[in-house]
Length: 331
Ligand code: SF4
Image (cartoon, rainbow, N blue to C red; front, side, top):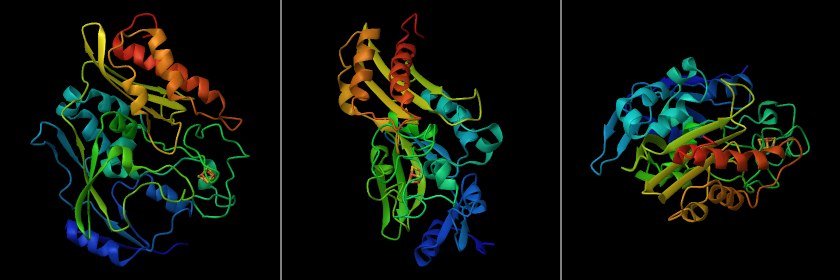
């Protein structure tokens, strides 16, 4: 049995102070992933710091025309909020593609960013896993790796990030607001999650004493031309094999700007600004989108069971862009 204590923080400074004094403590919001990890003995915190009383449950407009979503806003509240539905429907759709209604009612915005990989070996403490136990090896590389990464992998780890919401946030160029002992700072979404490299036990660039307080969306929401495409083994309550958040700004018959993020293929939502920029000024067409897909997946590499994902990802990119642009035939 793992013994742990529980305390409920009554303010943000109290929460930050408490975690900075105990490196084996963990914040708990909805607990939808953390409790699984504790039950499986993957994570063994000595103390849980409850966040439910903190004033982080608001969705409000920012001075520059964007939107701030508090870290304790539940996934359901975010997905069904009128401002999210109207101005950032890509985010709403991505959230609703994930988990189940019950889980979305509990899971929080901050927690969604911090959920950990669903690699089977990570959850099985009888097998080697560099993410769970640095230096122990990787059970997935030579094992059953159907759900694993094809981009940005390392010798140490080939896990994927499981979130749908984060794929949309990456495409929308969100910013993560955090508070720690040294004050507040913001982290761009592209910099928030890490690739595994030699440190697969670190999922994010959040410092140990930092608390996520909000996610901020810029003004541009790509409300008119967007798609969240999720390809998975079951029609509901399954993680993505490949997902694509596609957002386009069209002017006349030309693409003015494009955003594309992939889920289920890497240790973080995968974006390639160079490949996106190559779409600027082009007419939407299957051929253009196929070139984009080739560029985006140029370095993709499978590990046996997941090699099918390389072609699946290319086709998913083309389909998502066709849907977002309203191209007939593929949408
Ligand atoms: Fe662990 Fe990563 Fe290997 Fe999975 S892929 S077993 S999480 S090191």
